[in-house]
Image (cartoon, rainbow, N blue to C red; front, side):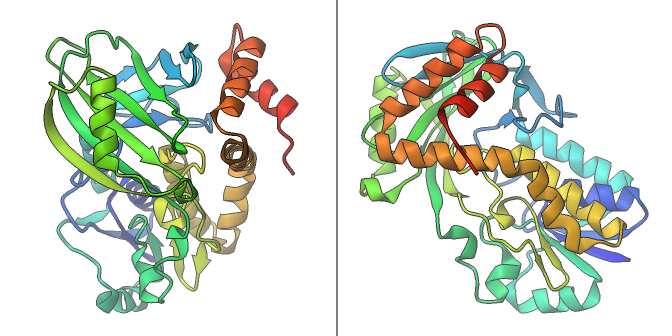
Length: 349
């Protein structure tokens, strides 16, 4: 069986490696070089609780999350399986493991609308991991399908003193937009490096100038004199492009819209969808891929969708009330407290 994987991010590399390790003939097409063009805070949140520590690229385990709404909170995240990673090194490791498993990786080989038909003809199956633009959807005229609701992001890589962020990261919710800004440190020294960004999740709040917001945030956090090493931005899909199986093509990761509708993170679902898509092919049951995936993520997505809806309706006061409940119930274990608070205060179908 011949399988084409489009995209060399975590979802595509995981799919390719899983398929090749089990005897399938796999070719992966990557538009750039592996590890380039990464628009991500580089925090790995394993909220599904199935991955554990990433295999490579780990900078440190995040043991405390500094969270600000109206008030400031310190959340013990030592049991939440949260990691800061270097995505470049992590993806290079994943690509080497894929190559060792027999995957043929073609870097700097973009797949266009013009040649996707040839790939779909020449390969038995295609796994689309090409991100929010989802080349196979675009080729069918459905390119906006997984972008009907998306978050806008802007992120700076800053150089400066981040020595106060030992094994921690910071997130802040503010009242004048639905979204948050983050400080995700990579090097926590006096001459350190951090990803500082903002995610804007809801256009019903009106238009927002992300660059002006970032300037305000830098002054607010006393980072205005730090050196900007990189400036990146992008979109995050907040709505799934179901069905995930279309003819001989399976959608995974951002191509399927598998990012959190609440906070935009999606590495855990990217890895899981890539692995599950490959396993469904190996088992001769690609039609079961979406059903099996939804069985695993349905509660996570349902709660996140509901929290997003209530956040939109009631504002950050609701978010603060929910966080206080989670901290109350989870004085010894925040994960358990969070789950109890959700079940107590939020009803989902």
